[in-house]
Length: 225
Image (cartoon, rainbow, N blue to C red; front, side, top):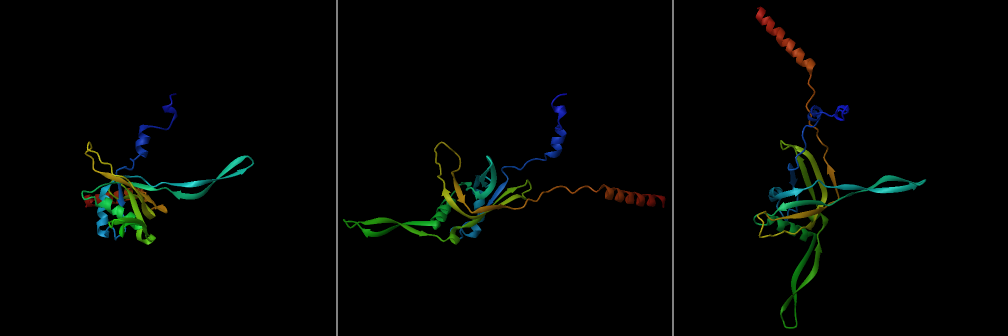
């Protein structure tokens, strides 16, 4: 006997059990930004600037306990990796300015004219500014994977999120692509909303036959009269 004949695999079993996969291009970011940086009614428009992203990553620290020359491994602290999202730069570059302003709220560094040099010219002096309160810059970011009909497949919420890194915008005379940049969010933790598995309800053959028999009896009764 050949290999395939010894296994339960067949084209029919594959097509019956694999009903298609989630599409990588069906996703949605619902941005949340400080309202004094971006008014709430404007934030909704920023989701259309998303270019790409990934599902957030987490890991559990490994704790090893040695006993009788064996390593027993246990789960320890769970940590959540930074989350990256790539954004297209809009025609007015608003989105870039807004993220710069958001980061400025976290730690503001100003240039002030506060003294004159030996020749009487005004010199600028840089000094460390104020650090924003957490309530002023921490947000909850919502990210979704979608089904083909636009309904939610996976909903993920990232809590206490803030922009840790605003990436560079690459410029090139030889390209026709839109300018884009990456934002790296740091956050405390994320949660996955419980998945709703859509499956067809089992077909009730008994009810189907009973209804069919009832209809048939009514039809015979009409014919006989």
